[in-house]
Image (cartoon, rainbow, N blue to C red; front, top):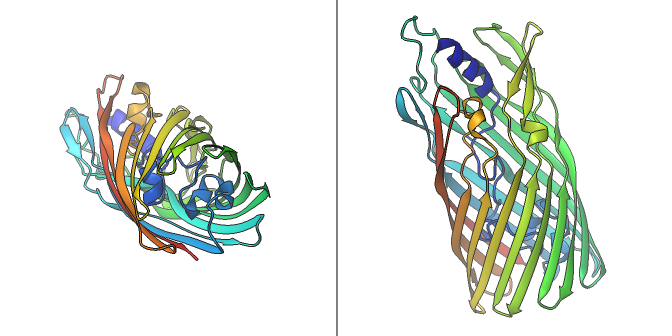
Length: 395
């Protein structure tokens, strides 16, 4: 069991932290969470350009628009092993999404958005995993602590060759931080920069029907260098590369009446390209293959906006994506308990005047667990509570 513990630590050491759709956030603003992430065809705010750069061409603002959103995420997680059930000690995180857009002409729009699109972490104390009772305990603490976050900044350009079509492109800049402490490694927090791009289009088929399409490239993130230590390779510089996955999304929005809008999106995340196998280089030159085994994920999102009156809009959303972590990969993902599959959102937007609005959202990520198919029988489980507030301005 001690060897299994150390091996688990090695695998845990590079696991991404806990999040929502795999390791990706459903949204970065209150309005996006309320739609369940269904914003590709009918964008709901300026930071929608993070997911579809054509969004700023279809928002209909006068000259300038910007949004400020902040949230608190509470994702209780647990590991159940032969020692019993252990809950993570770190259960509150901040989320944010902001954006600014300007109308250059009737056909050209510029924008900039920033948001935390992936991340969070776990903090399991010593004793979470059992040690071999026939041997002395390992010298170091066998706690499991991971912390990961990816902030994206997306300067974007949208062009409208005609009133019912917007085409957009964006250059995506990322800063990804990672820290971890496991039985196998102690690697302090460090940051790495990455770059990618996105293209998208939104087409208004009729006054009631609109379609959207977007592609976000894989973000190439520079190599991490940790000044860390491990019982297997000692102190020194550990190196590893972890890119952010590419995604493809398609959405349809339907507006049967002036007071009701319904949108459905389908999104694909290519997790297998970045989270199937990750190689960790040790200070002594050896390479440890970390087989996380993440599968690609298809996410289904549904959002509904209902205008009670010109100043009040009730909103609801639903998001489903099967966890990319299979039963056979549980032991390799104890630091990345990304197993929540169903999200339900409710909230309201208050329009104070033609320039200012506020939005409040609550999202519940339903409890889900996955049990290891290995002899360890470990169960990883998680649920979520997410509250976001947002200020929107149209000038």
